[in-house]
Structure formats: structure tokens, C-alpha cells
Amino acid sequence: SDSIVPVLSLSDDVDSGTVCDDGGSTGATGDGGVVLIINIIRNTPYLLSISASYFLVKLVRYSLLMWLPFMLTQAKGLSTNSAGALSSCFEMGSMIGSIFAGWACDHLASGRRLLVVWCMLLGTAFATLYYARLDLYPPTSPESCVFYEIVVLIIMGASIAGPDTLLSGPIAQDCASNSSEKNCSSTIVGIVDGLGSIGAIFQGPYTAAIIKNSEMTQQWSNLHVSFALCLFLAALLLSSGALPDEARRKSSHHWVKALYS
Image (cartoon, rainbow, N blue to C red; front, side, top):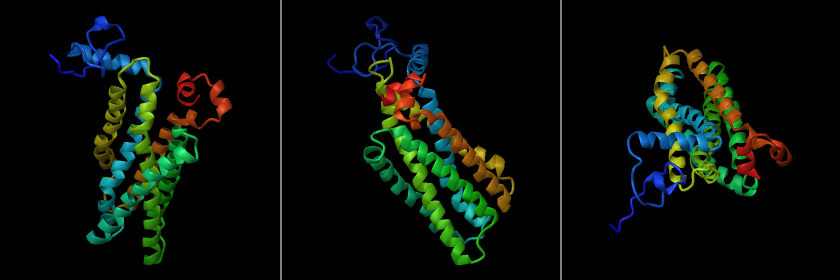
């Protein structure tokens, strides 16, 4: 047949019967596909760390996105229309943050994408901590309260959208380019996105486990503090990317050398 069927390779040996992107014979089915995925994870430096960080980013972002209108109506007493309009500020910030993250990689960080992600994750964590405080100690003036909500939600949306965009795209591609499993770049990007997206699945049960009474602001504050801890952990998983050039060259983590040398 003249058609090319993209399948996955178990190794660089042509006798394995599979190829990731280039086509050829098939055979990566059943248990073979599982072995392939395991081999890719084992032979791709820090693939799991990047995926775990993306899992935490997805968990926090989708929980905020899905639960914000409910939280604003139940805990802060806003009308449905006001809560819907106010929660849109989060995604408005996301649009800004995605563009800024790409620009920052190109013009501020000299292509060091993990450094940009690391800084934005810390920014999101601190903004989320402030939002947790705002839950408990809102301004006395209604006008000031709305103003602070808008500003903090835009900052949170902007600072978490950048890591979401970069981890699932360019950074996953960087990870794939340094894997010893050749011609599997699309599979590796899919693994990062797929494992990370599990966070979006767990956001519902995670939020519901903390929020027992939706009208108690203390519980929402606790939830936002837990989000901040998740983001600090996500930044920690990527912390080597923020090292200076000399420190990275001396680092024992070969994935840092591969991604940033």
C-alpha cells in the first residue's frame, strides 16, 4: 500500500516493527504500546517532572475557571449576572498572559522558557495567597471590593495562562527533542498534555473535598491557599530552569544541560 500509517516505535531497531512518526510497519498494539510509553518515559529526561508540573497547573487553572462564578455568588453574595461578568476577568487575564509569556521567552529570557514558567508560577502562587486573604478580609467599600477582585483575577489569569501555554507546547517539544527515543516527538508532547490534563479531571473532586459548605468564606480561603501550595510545588519541579548559566553547566541534572546549554 502507498499509504503511510503513523505508528509508534519501541526502539531505534528496525526489527522492532514500529516507528513513531515516519511510518512503516505496525505492531505497537496491546502490551507493546504500553511498553513503548514506558520506554519513552524512561528515556526522556524529566518528562515526568514537566508533566507533574503541568498536572498541578491544570488542576489550579480549571478549578478556578469552573468554580469562580459559584464561589462569587455563594461566598461573596454577588448576583448571578455580576458573578458571571466578574469571573470573565480571569480569562481576560489569560489572553494577556499567553501572549506575554511567548514575548517574554523571545525577548526577555533569551529562549529560556522554563525560567519564564517558573517566574509566572511564583507570581500566580503569591496572587492566589493574596486572593485567599481577600476572601477573609475584603475591603469595606463595595467599590473597592469589586476593584480588588478585578485586578487580582486578571493577574491570576494572566500569570497561570503562560505556564499552561508553554508547558503543553514549546517546552514539551524541547523535552521531545532531547529524548533518546527518536521520531516520537508527537507522542512525547501527547504524554505531557495527557498526564497534565488529568489535573483538569481531578479539579472537581479536589475542590468538592475542601468545600463542605459553599457559604463559608474560610473554606474558600483554605482552597486558595492549597492552590498556592500546588503552584509552589509546580515551580519547585521546574526550579533548575531558573538557574544561572554557570550553575546550569555545573548541574548534575543532564536534562538542564540538554534544554539550556
